[in-house]
Image (tube, rainbow, N blue to C red; front, side, top):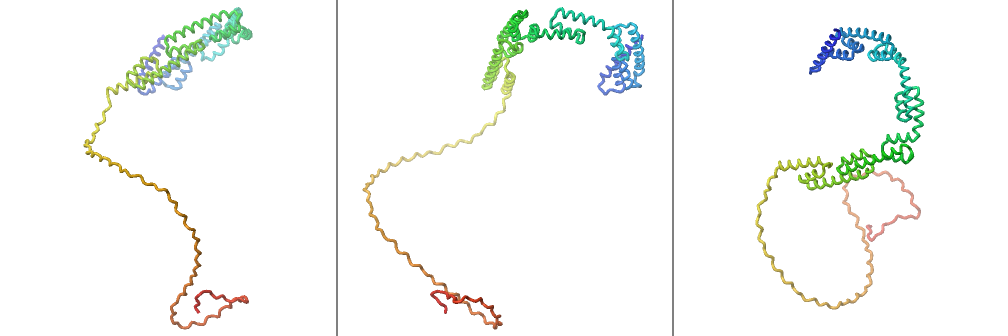
Length: 402
């Protein structure tokens, strides 16, 4: 009855959640309450029920949350008592799985490990005996992966260190590389190893697969197949041939595109598309074809006609006058050159005497106006004594005013 009641409540909550999701408007407080309750019910843990009550202490489902908290506490106490009463590894493991939120989880894990120790020791011992029986690198690695802290883990590591330095270790590395170079190196290093026969068979198989893939790529002869061969067989025997073929196809594609672009017609681009199935310029060719067809369907408007000026008749052409006959003059008589006599040598004339220009006469001043006699001037200062024997110079000239 209780289970049916809870299923009914969960269905109601799911319906509320679906109704909330269908609404396009902002969620209301009741819708948020229903969402939080649905999350708590889905987890069915005390932490989420307590979180719900912390957000909505008076929510629509607060009573149910408190009831479920009390029910979980009762169930946990009963399950812990039952696990302690059974006291087996699997009982404690079931308790830990169902009630990982309980405070008794630490004690349950400790009891589980104690009870599981004999079983685990027996399994570890059986795995070690199996690894020793095969005595191969893969078995020791599997043992350490399953029991990294087991009682025989150190013995397994020591045995692995020894085996890695033998031909078995080289063979394991070769198989993990799985390349023709690795197989060839192993055969060269260990020609008498029991794994050499297997290495030769693997190398032959690799070469057959390599040749088969190369033949398929060469038969299709496109960049996609050559690149797939290079990706699947990076160390293949035909790697250089594949790279050369890719380069040649790209060069031919570029040449075909240049030819079509120079002609720039629909037929030229159609020819490029038909011959270059994997060309790098296919999109550009299709775009150009659409442009050319649009131009044919909707030609651009023609410019208005150019009106040329009226053509005037040329002016009458006057025939040129006939040229006059050239006047023939008799050649001049050339007389022998006459050398003129040398002119007589005349001595240069004597230079003329220098001209002496007389000084100009002094200007004649007009008579001064009659004025009252001025007062007697102050006595002049004594003149500086002249040197003895020095007489005043008289001006020289042809004209003497005295």
